[in-house]
Image 1 (cartoon, rainbow, N blue to C red):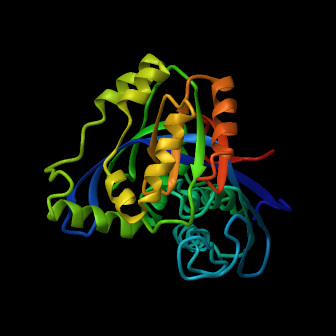
Image 2 (cartoon, rainbow, N blue to C red):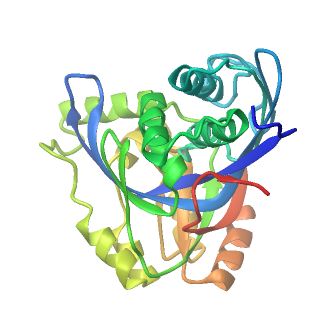
Length: 311
């Protein structure tokens, strides 16, 4: 132990400005080519010295439940699993009182659970003084989930494999987004399963490999919102719309409100609407808040750093 009374780490939500989904692999995952963008909507994880492990959750989705929309406060939570994994790796006792303060909506395609796990790895590494290197933490993060490594990296990154192999991307701009969360959460496995069904039925294009990310990477380097908007791709969007037809209305509302472009973020049901600038994002958020199709509307910016200690 370091002797600290508490360690606090915050980690950002992500949106996928590109999500190319290949065919189902033999291991049950899909080959992905995705471009992650970390945005200014954060969860925070606090850890304190204790005997044994405990976990409390407050804020968005707090409580124990079986389905999307709720966050368990037990060992099924990725934060708990992160603690046990790091302790085993470092050869230390898994002793910590952990608390998660959630602002990232649950089961919304924003990787809130993965952000929490990334924050837990950073916080517990500091609390336990395990001195794990960046590469070690990334390897542990990949064992926890496909989006967890990006929670450590943040910024903008290209993800391949099942999304867990991340490489930072240099880009020249800062982008303003409005996130509209429409209705209840969507299960990520259910959305991938629906995509497989649509492809098998001929209702979505069959692919042999993920859609290339070159157009959006070039647009991000150029720094033009119009170029980025024109290059947005989400191969999961047809499946999310199939499971939740009301998302079509949400996408239309974003277009009608003046968004440069909009897409379903990840597996949904969040709609990420790109604005031309900060003032445009303020106007867009106000329009969407009054449209009656979203239960939550948040204006955010990105890119922002990944999981970081709070001084």
